[in-house]
Amino acid sequence: MDSDSKLVAQLNSELYFLIARFLQSGPCQNAAETLIREVEEKELLPTRRDWTGKEHPGRYEDLVKLYGHISPDHLLQVCQRVCPLLEKEVPASVPGVHSLLGAGRQSLLRTNKSQYCNHMTC
Image (cartoon, rainbow, N blue to C red; front, top):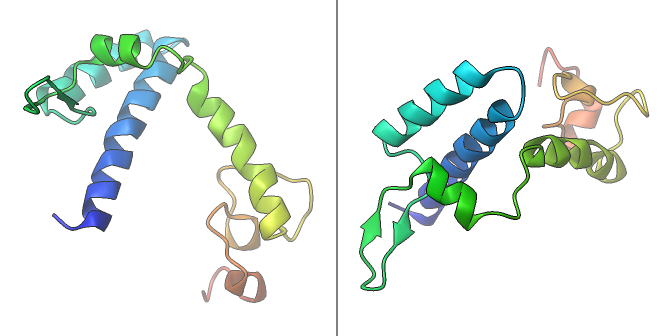
């Protein structure tokens, strides 16, 4: 697996963990339980290494303990910080309007190049 693929796989596993943490602390307890069960069964959570260097599948509860500094609203905090940071780097077409669901020049995936494109053509 090349380094880009490894990075994407790591980000995916961390994102599954953060989504589960977020869901578990809100009104979607059943969704959290289902997600946790499924990501554990499919071994999609971050792995751990033992003292011999052997890799083991991650278990959700172990990760909660290991990453005790990650609060249940950590994913929400990340999302809250992304919009203002991107706004400084690549201003949106409507300043101050922040949404994770924006398109075109309001998209969180916008670039300097996309600032000059219509979202239907770029």
